[in-house]
Length: 300
Image (tube, rainbow, N blue to C red; front, side, top):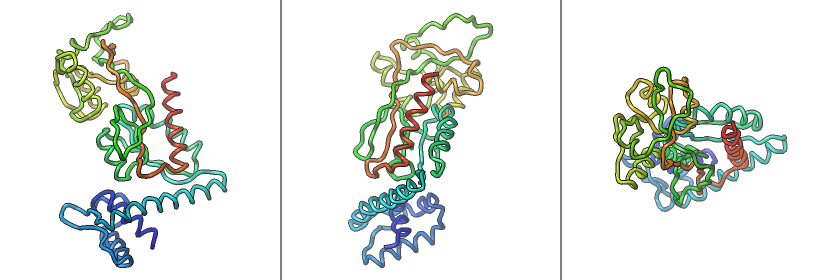
């Protein structure tokens, strides 16, 4: 059994499409289809049901998928162990970050990764939590940093810390240096908000907490992008509810006034990994680096 053929089959089965798998693997689709078909001929089993909507594993395919993940994981572990003989961990790690955290975390995390894992490669994607959960399941990501992650059979969740959502408004001209006063959640509900669309984790958190006190947000604009939200707030389109890190990492943090909300709006930040693919040693080291980098940022 050829390892390349096995890797191609696993990726097609996980992504449910030859087209998506060819893009993820950077392999031409005809070549990908040919390799998977050769594997089926060798095993004398139809592994995938091909249709206009994609490809789904047969019963034999599901069995091989379970074995294939384990085999490929052991091959990766073997490469890492050989790397350790040379004195360094190797391999590739794919990380997903939420937009509100990506700008402030990406640079220090990349520096730490290059310093401590010089023979490993790093891929970082910025996406919403729902998308990152899908990518974890399909194998496009190894690690995701999520807000308010919900338990799922195929995902392992490792809580990091709670973050407070703050009201972000444009800074009025000539604003004094006195600390801004807190604002009640009910008052926030009456303000025009620039907020992500459902099912963004922050949006769902805001709606849930407001529903608990019998109100709902006044949505001025739905924007899925922290930078765009902050630009619109600065332009006077409305206020926003974001973490302190999201504002601090903006191009002009001084353009905004932030106020605490009462009762506090808390979101839980967690690390998520696939329960179907055990973390390699390089991935485990990367998990530690993410924790350390977040702790260092929080200590500032």
